Length: 246
Ligand SMILES: [Zn+2]
Image 1 (cartoon, rainbow, N blue to C red):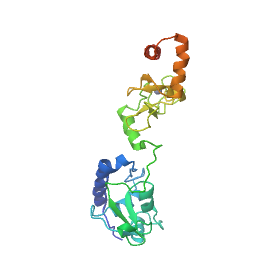
Image 2 (cartoon, protein in one colour; image 1 turned 180 degrees about the vertical axis):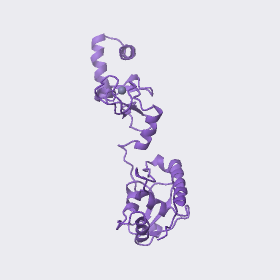
Image 3 (cartoon, rainbow, N blue to C red; image 1 turned 90 degrees about the vertical axis):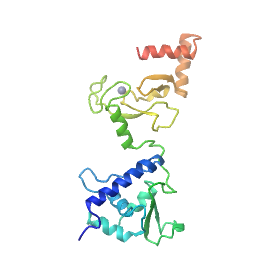
Image 4 (tube, helix red, strand yellow; image 1 turned 90 degrees about the horizontal axis):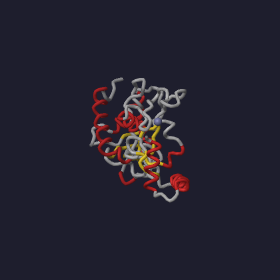
């Protein structure tokens, strides 16, 4: 059987998808799709999205049977592709279906159509708890040379202080009062990203610059103000920085 699309065509079309993703979709929290898995095989998600994106921006409604036939050229065991549904509802791509009540688009029953690569699927709700995608976090870690912003321990290597532990970089809040999203994240190791960190606000270099406006932060202020008498919060902050970052 001859393939409907060559590797070259697939690669070219995927670059168009990626460009649109970065320009339009990423900011809505739409999830990125990998072209290939770690074994070098096309992912089913990519295949379905590519097939639906054929001729972009002049896309056509495609039947589920046609999609399944296409994916079977790569995965002969596939009986019924579910990817088109997942790509819209769970990953956010603007794919409408004739059997889902997206009736205003006049898609035949059992068909899917990629409307565009500039808007998210209307009913898509990004998972705000995730904040940033793991791909983005990989990029962020790279800019920090895979080191903890605060103590410099390197990912996968023995920790600078706890040398019997390997360093694992986590998404550390700079300001715990704000959401865990880009601009408010630094890579921190499991030690620096510890539970009591809700007390502090960090800068991009992982240093404490403020006491957080949180219950934890207030408790610290109360506790230490008792100790230092009637000193102001400002004085106290300098005092703490001196202790922490001498
Ligand atoms: Zn650290």
